[in-house]
Length: 223
View 1 (cartoon, rainbow, N blue to C red):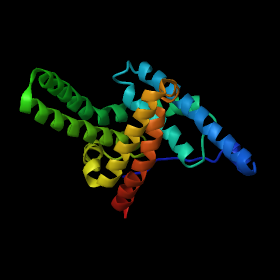
View 2 (view 1 turned 45 degrees about the vertical axis):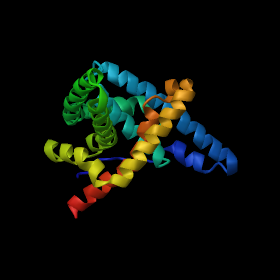
View 3 (view 1 turned 135 degrees about the vertical axis):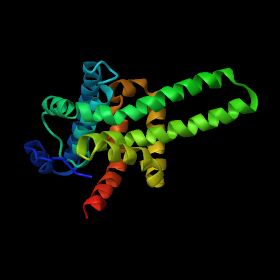
């Protein structure tokens, strides 16, 4: 895959690195927290700007681009500008890569309707199969914003990689599911955190797990 990421060094990062001891740690944590809240708000705005359906994928891609800088302790100080610049630049690509997921999502919704009408052993079997599909897609979706926003490979290879990534990297898939489950539990018991961080927190955490696999695949293709 062709990597198009940019990681500019910011003056704020250099200043923060000079703060000694626990004060620097606290400042770093507070900065990450506040920027995650900002990314969450921008992702909501980005989804709405695209009429929700067409805005979700580019909003996730832009949110991932910003949160990736937090993971490398190299955040941008211009969240607004950088978010919308990425959102516009990756709008078409992100939506094209998301098309298969919308299709599978519609099939899953139909299966859910059929599950509600079933009973007995058939219902148990259908429920187990649907759960496996949902978990698989959840893991695949963790790779989508990275491939959409940080690489420029053609549509078919990109979609193929995203759809096969959970099977290619099962260990990372289990970790991603564990992270999503943990975040879900925290949000369930502390609803205000869900309002503050929304999709930005799971995007940040799962992105740290998925990004090395994407980078490794890109390096393998270019070597």
